[in-house]
Length: 149
Image (tube, rainbow, N blue to C red; front, side, top):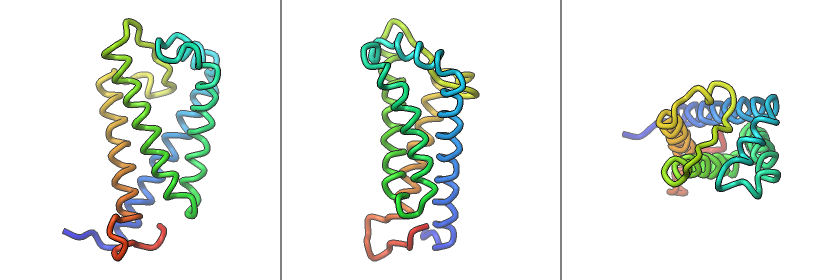
């Protein structure tokens, strides 16, 4: 079944809006409790030595991607960066859960209330949304490419 052009644009817009909400919310939550966020990252067995760089880099990345998603001329790369960042976050959680004796929780806001399984499912859903949004906006078949949503 083929999805019609208006629906593709709407789906891409919804995906981008969801990501903007997620990244702005997550970045602001981390900024509001920056001390806790950076302390938790510092206690991570994978990030201890580089946490002073990773903590601000995560926040800046989330905010920049949110901005890039809102601009049509940078949306393609922003969807790819969204996919990459959520894949990294999901992989990090998986590695920490399965190979670490200590599991730090550096999430902020509502996401902090999720259990680890729910968090992985939530992240996987957003990974899938990035793929869907990208493929609808920029199909692999160049003849069916829609105009920038």
